Amino acid sequence: MAGYSWRNIIVITLFLLVAAWQYFSGQASQPPTQATTNTSVDLASSTTPAKTLAQLRAAANDPNAKFWTHIQGTVIKNLKDDQEGDRHQKFLVEVAQDLTLLVSHNIDVAERVPVREGDLVNVQGEYVWNNRGGVIHWTHHDPKGRKAGGWIELKGKRYD
Image: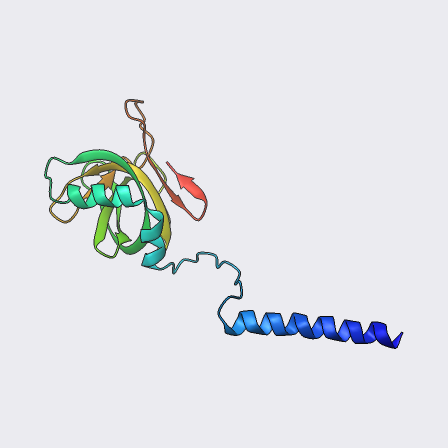
């Protein structure tokens, strides 16, 4: 019986030594962290494909730019609603450290999205050039069925 208990002690000691070595050498696996409402910009920029970022950066210098796109970014500011004509909810999304876009969401057609500064959002809509980097609109279904329609996704809920 005494030999069995020494074997257990040796195995446990070896296990602890390996675990300590991994921890102190930085090789210990850490559980993935879940995104919160204060998601960093690095996360936002890493999840929007490089091809999309390149297209958006090029479009910022092209007054004729207009195309459908899908982005993910961090809400950095809520703006006042546009009350002229169709009402639009407006907010700024930072897609990368050097790229901020205005999202203009028609709240006469779709439900208001309860975004707060720091929220991570997915947005699909039509990009249109403006002199501040661009705006994404058509972030809702098309009530007349002419366009594919877009959406905004926040915390797993899709608003369209």
